[in-house]
Each structure stands twice: as C-alpha cells, then as structure tokens.
Length: 297
Image (tube, rainbow, N blue to C red; front, side, top):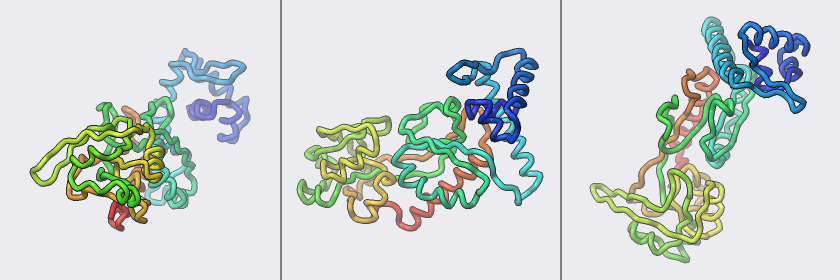
C-alpha cells in the first residue's frame, strides 16, 4: 500500500523506489500484486508516464489516510518524543502566504527537521483531494459546507490608500464620500463594489466605483501603492505598509464586515498531525503579529 502511495505521489516507479530505498522491480511487483488482489487496475501505464485510474484515485485517498493514521498511532505510542516526518502539502492564497506564511517557514522547518513542506500558491479554491492537499488556508465564507474546517483567525476589512493619494484626492470622512473616489475593486468572491458600513447602531451601504478592477490580490496591492486609488481590503493584505506608513487606513470609526481565515482539510479526512501542527503554527503567528501591532495603526 505504501509503495502505491509513493508511486501515485512521485508519478513513477523509480521515484517511489528511491523514496523507499528499494529496487524498482520490487515496487513494480508490489503494485502488480496489489492490483491482482483488488481485482482492479489502479494505474494507467503509457509512454507519457503513469496516471491513476478512477479506482486508483479512490484507493490512493483511502490508503494515504490509513498510512497517516498508522503513523499518528505510532507517534502517540512513542509519546512526546515523536517527530513529524514525511511530506506536508499546503495551499494558500498568493498574497496572504507571501506576507504571513512563507517568511515564517524557516522556523516551522527548524522545529520539524524530518518534515518536507510543499506550498501551492493559488487565489482559487482548488480541489484539495485532486491536488493532494493536506491543509488549505482560505479566507471569507466557505461555500462548500461539506468541508472539514476550523476558523483560526479573523481580520478587519479597511478602506486603504496611500498618504500621497489622500493628500491629492482628499480623505473621506463618511462612507458616502467614497463615491467621489477612484476605487480599485477586487473582482473576486468576497470583494466587489457593494459594501455595508456600521458605526454603533448606524448602518449605511455604499457602492464604490472606479476604472480599475483586478482579480488578484497582488494586483490590488500594486495598484494602491502606485497611487491609482483606494481599495477595501483585509488588513492582512497591506500589513507591512500599514505598519511602515506607506499605506493608510481611513474611516476607522466605521466598521466593515470582518473576514475569517479558515484551515480547511479534504472532505471526510481527519486532519493529520502534520496538518494540525501547521495550522496551530500559523494561528500562533497571526495572534502574535496582532498582539505586537501587526494590524493597521
């Protein structure tokens, strides 16, 4: 079973053999025996390489989970001295990971020297099972209620621009003032042009407008920092600039709907010890950052 999982993950018998420190013929024989015992074909072999059949994909998910659970049982039996090992595959939005995850990976890897981490950066909600993801970090509402998820943080949404932009165009005093500003609109789920503001018991809604719509957070950041307009964004997206003063949050006495950060796991799978350790590490880092003034000033 482990040989099959390694073949599925490396895409070759030779790659699996190297990881298992055995000969390639032994891996091929193990897969053939497994297919014979199950009575189904797990792998499609061609001149272009190997691919999983539908039965192979289903078996891979169950086999990987069984191996992870066996590893966890072994760790539990050995107690606190057990170490995390193997591969951890993580998925996160590009900008959030660049600012709040990747800079801390050296510390996480130092804590777990036998663990390898693969990071998939994608602003889309990728299929966790198809991409082989152990844990994904997602922001906003979760449209798929079947996902196994845990909320690990909550961030503020703010109206953000540069000091030079506000010096040139004026600083909004009320949400309705935003109508006269050039807004850079995040054209993705969780963004858009329609926003509800709250101050005490007062509520008001505003539809911002602008000549520029961008579907990636990196583009929103660059446009704002180039003085092309203001935006409505999570504080996470502009955390370094808000701390340094290169970006400024306005209308601070009005609140926008906050944004949640979730650790999401493949449907039906219990989070592995590796995934839980990573989730708790990110949670702690974000909490420390906020306690140290990592949000907007």
